Amino acid sequence: MSDHCMHTQFVVNGETVDAQVPVRMHLVDYLREELGLTGSHLGCEHGVCGACQVMVDGQLVRGCLTLAVQANGKQVQTIEGLSESGELQTLQAAFLKHNAFQCGFCSSGMLLTALEITKHHPHATRDEIKELISGNYCRCTGYQAIVDAIESVLKQGA
Image 1 (tube, one colour):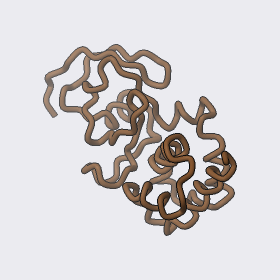
Image 2 (cartoon, helix red, strand yellow; image 1 turned 45 degrees about the vertical axis):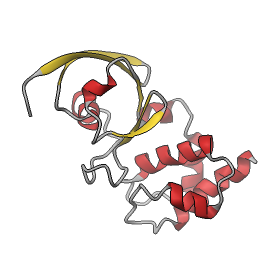
Image 3 (spheres, one colour; image 1 turned 180 degrees about the horizontal axis):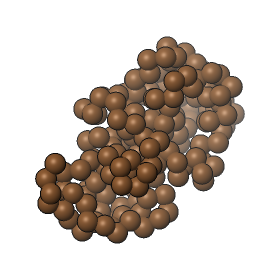
Image 4 (tube, one colour; image 1 turned 90 degrees about the horizontal axis):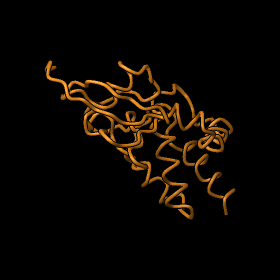
C-alpha cells in the first residue's frame, strides 16, 4: 500500500470523518480498519460477492472496489448505521423469522440489497427478487429463505 495520503472528509453514519487517508485504501478496508465498523465483510475483493456493500450518497456500492478517498464530500452508511437507525428493523425481523441468517458472512450485504429492493422494487415478484439478489453470494441458505424473507417484507408494504 502506498504511503501517499490525501485529506478526505466524509460523513459515516452521521459522524464526520476528517482524516488523511491512504489514496489506495479501499473504502471497506478504511471502515473496518480505521473506524472499527466491521459489519461489512471482505469476501472476494473483486466486486462479485456483495459482502462488502455500503451505501454512498444513497447508492449501493461495492466497498472493495471503491477507494476511501472517493467518499470525499459524501455520505456513507454502513450496516451498523442502518441498523441503529431502525431502517433495517423490518428486514432483520423477516430474515430471523425465515431463517435467512446462517453463518452471517453475507448478511450485511444481503440486507443492504434487500433494503434497495424494498425501496426501488416494492412490487418485485419472487423471480425478480432472485434476479435482484444475484449479485450477492450466500453459501449457507440456498437463497430460498432469503427470498422468502424479502418477499414477506414486500407483501407487508402492499
